[in-house]
Length: 147
Image (cartoon, rainbow, N blue to C red):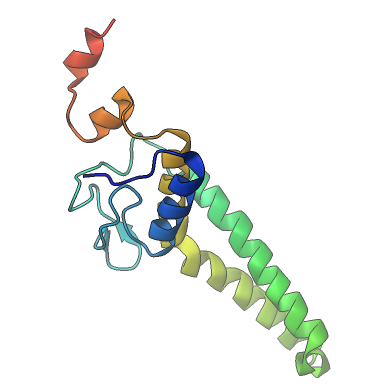
């Protein structure tokens, strides 16, 4: 069911396009979120489990924070120094900067999770035993006897 290219570059393009569209990076299916923020436990189409282990999305949270803060602060600096907002009192410039730095991480939160899954998929392509176990094709018992 996973129609992913074999070579890394094309797999990167396909999975990132899916992730930025809030679709399953594995199969491209929409509907992996319950609302804006809540990621489902499994993909409704291919059945892959998104959170592999406790703390799996910590890297996604860090990615979100770094990208969102750079975008928010960069936009605030641009608006304050390159537009007419530079004529506002300092307190209003600070309010604008703080608002942008708060809004960006919230707005980008679901994308950071799907992008994190896609990045993991780039470095750990399907077909490996760990990926088969994600889909439920292997049991823990099978892994114990694999050697």
